[in-house]
Image (cartoon, rainbow, N blue to C red; front, side, top):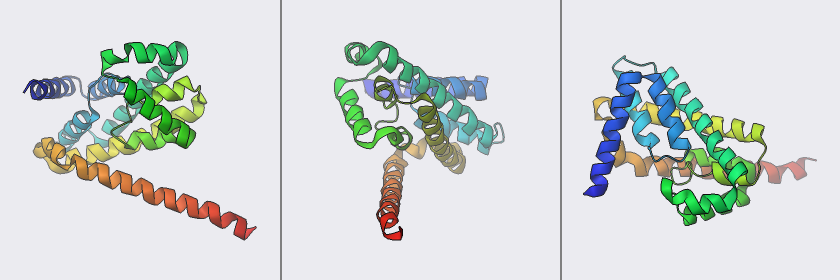
Amino acid sequence: MVTLDIINNLANFVIQTISNTGYLGIFFLMVAESALIPIPSEIIMPFSGYLASTGKLNPALIILAGSIGNLVGSLVAYFIGIKLGREFIVKYGKYVLLKKSHLEWTESYFKKYGDKSTFVSRLLPAIRTYISLPAGVAKMNLKKFSIYTFAGSIIWSAMLTYVGTTLGDQWTRIRHYSDYIDGAVIIGLVILAIIIAKKRIAKPNNS
């Protein structure tokens, strides 16, 4: 019950913020989400999409505001990783609901898949918020980090905005579809990985 009350209060806060401030609210909420403050984009963007379906907001500007906000917030987390290091994050991460296990999981993910994991992770709800930290700790190239993060954020923001626009005043039903959305994203990424792998295997044969 307590968790449900927190979620409802958070949803009401997001709704009021965007209703009162529009694109600016979307931007700052998405900055917060990517800077490790637990405000889910799964509420921010679908509600914004709903407002687009009523004609109050422009979907292209919603996606732009959300994607830029994601990039700015991710850069904050990235520089926290660079400047403060792993030990500080492990010690104080609990205050933004970041457990040591979360950090270790994203670290292993980043080490396994390298720089491109900052793009792929933007499409994975489980780690998208935290991947910027190990990227910062590893001192990933800033230009690459920014490009991959922004590209992934555009796709994520567009997908959630589209869902909100399609569902209209039933946008809150996204919670019922979240597992299907996650599954579709993962299947798409697996297919992409297979295509890339086949191209790499085919290259020596063409030479």
